Image (cartoon, rainbow, N blue to C red; front, side):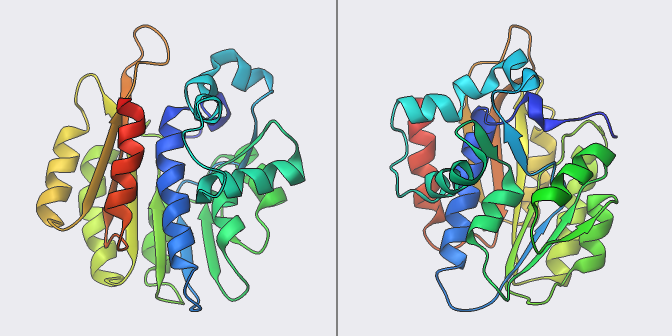
Length: 257
């Protein structure tokens, strides 16, 4: 599907949950002087302007990153806040980084980045900001299967589809099993929406059965507007780094408070 554009949702509560954990993992992985690979299946444009007409139309960032900043949810030295400050210094106070730019903040010379984005305009925008990355204008699941295992073998894959393709819920568990067989040392992270109809539940049950030692982190929040189906955000992480469980618990407590 080529209709989804994340600018309408950038910086929302789900982004805050996902990006706080993503930045923590990247900070942890890059603390060691060993090269790594970062693979992302649905990259988007990489950089968002929260003052744009699209972002202001939904104003979802008000319940996400802007709320977190007003309430001092995350200290200045938190990995996400460090990445956000760096992006704002370069692109302005209303800039918000998507996951490719969060990764770019942490990755070093010698690390490898593979980003897939099918939407033509989103891909072109990504190409303007994703320095040093290998870009793919193709289906992200196909790219991941072709790349895995990447070189270097140490690293992280983020799977973050829009779920506009309804078969994603059925296709992702066997996809994760396939990637894990090929790349058994990789950290595999899946973001998923928590929906009022519990459509995600079967997918997570199948993943939990296949990966009993994986980390599952979920937060809940009010719908962005009346009748909106998403009421929470989930992250399922295979081969989670040591300490991620404690960080996830801290983030979850912020949403409960």
